[in-house]
Image (cartoon, rainbow over all chains, first blue to last red; front, side, top):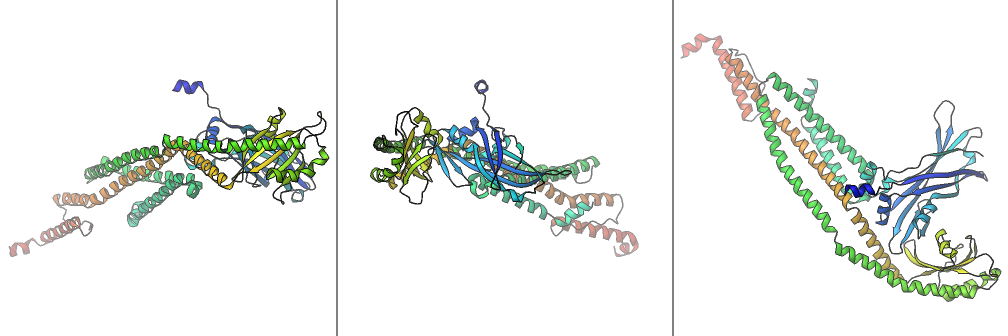
Length: 174
Length: 369
């Protein structure tokens, strides 16, 4: 058994932010980003068995201060639920922010749709100080708290579940 | 010394409080395992509370053990009896609890396994397959209708398409018809719902079969209602012009949709439960083991507590009789309560008092004799 398990390494999930940028349009900062989601064997198995997964993109705005640590001024979370619909053999993506649901035949397409942020309004430029230096941070992760209770404890302990991308940071420029 | 006095004054109440708190949090934990919605969010916290509570218990027992060790080294009176009583109480408590734990675990695992039956799984898979094949005929029929619509539309100039679309939709019985360009831009749409200004976009993957100039039909669940979505390539204008796509959304009869959705939901639920069987077993075993630990540790602590309380007057008496044997009649012992031991201590005190009095007035007692 051990030899067989060793021969087939378990693939872990990996999330990566490929690109993110912000644009000031009519006094509102808008964000576009591309996140690559790769689900590992554990997550895929759960998904195929009807366990919904919640994927989250967290965007934070920090004001940089000279002597103190940076101060968080705004945060936006984009949450999506991904689940498998066995009857139609399709993957359903439900956005918690907009309430809209889309369905996809292929998982890759569903993940690409979740990972694409396009022109998302982030914050009003008037809320920022004109002289302030601001930094944007963006990260994608899988929300363990939304998993069914029996697997949550193991999800905390195993590396296959608690997957997060690195923070992608860039300066906020008008 | 001060903590000893405090703990004597408070008695067993703090311990009882801790025990109850842990018991309540354990019962929450077992509810959370069973039903994620109720205490699911608290699960991690409950686990932490229990771990901390058990650590407090272990510390208390450790203190008691240390006390027993120190007393043993000093050969304090009553220490051997305390040791024997502690061991006896522990054996009395641990043995039945362990037996109950072992059998509960057996029942738990067998009970969980009996939920899942290969035959039920087959039945559900068959029900799902049956639903699919019931809908398959409809899918093919609606793809055919959409292809016919596409034939009617092809050859028309793009500018003229929006005009005929309403008529086509009504004739085909579609909920929604739309014509989009290859890049996804909508050029015309007609919907049964007059408030829907925009049709639902064909998603990226729908374009894929179209690249190979193929039609595409599938079930599409939208807000818990199952629709049929057919996508057909459209030749408009000259052959070398940009590709167009006709997309149609058909509803299926309510009864069929409801039944199919029920089958889908139950299948999904069963699959999820079957997948969660092993983690569920672990979680229940964990909760049960925590209950076992709580019971065992409380029993051990109670063994120490009772043994110390029982032995205290006996140790006093042992010390008192030793003092009397050495000729010290002034020894008085603290009264231990109203039970037989208390009575014994009281009698001892009376006895030493009388002996002491007799020692002070030896003549009078001699006269009376």
